[in-house]
Image (cartoon, rainbow, N blue to C red; front, side, top):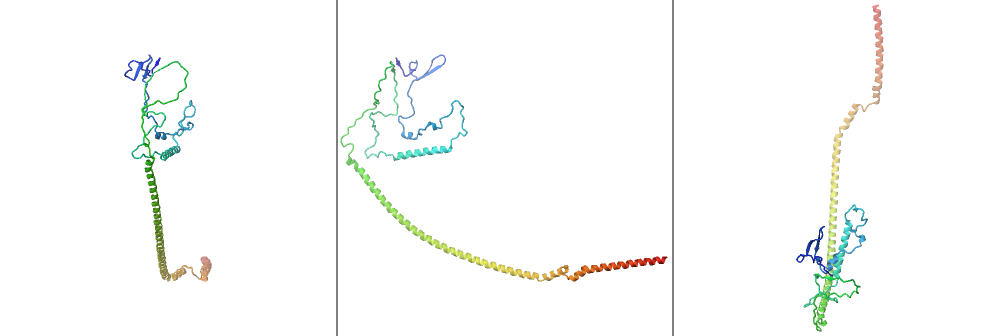
Length: 335
């Protein structure tokens, strides 16, 4: 019995079409397509630069994309469903360091030297079994006959299928490499580079010595200029201090003169104002009674009031006596 790899090959009308929808049962339709190789948009071999950019494998126990917990319970979102900025910054820093490390390793890697004039580098296969290199994956359709199951024979030694064409080249003795002849340009380059490097080092040493000499001369000139500047600054400071001191003395003398003139004017004004003030004050105080004789004051305040009172009493008694005498005289007259 032959088994075909195309399940739709026996269907009618499939000669000019790859896909076809045919009725299978009364319940619905079935879809069948011709089997074909997957045309993935990728190359046959990996690019080492692209492989270096991939994220290294991680432990899934610490991968945040792996869900942990019961599959029956309702998933609960975290309170803050936002990535931690510190963690993101740390991951970016780690990625930058890895990329820098890979670039440094790629730069430190020993590369093939440039070919000599008249020759060029070529990529060749050094494997035991040669095969044709191609980006296109070969495709083919095959059918097989299924027989009864037999014991599995031992696996034969794997030998890849030969592809491409064998090419032979005749090489005579001395045709590929002559050391005496080939080593001359290398030695010339080495000797020339050594002499050039030595001359550059000698020139650099002379230049450093000259720079050091110029630096010492510049420092000497700068120190002399700094000393001169300090001397001028000290002289200017002394002149400024002397000027300020003399100005302060002059201002002090003018202030003292002004104070003396103000004192003299105040004294003259006080003398002219107080010349008639003392007699007038004494006169007004005397008139107001602040200056008095004690005896006179006692006579006026004590004796004279007492005397006036006693005289008034005597006058009152005499008046009463006269009034009573006049009344008796009149009564005796009318009788």
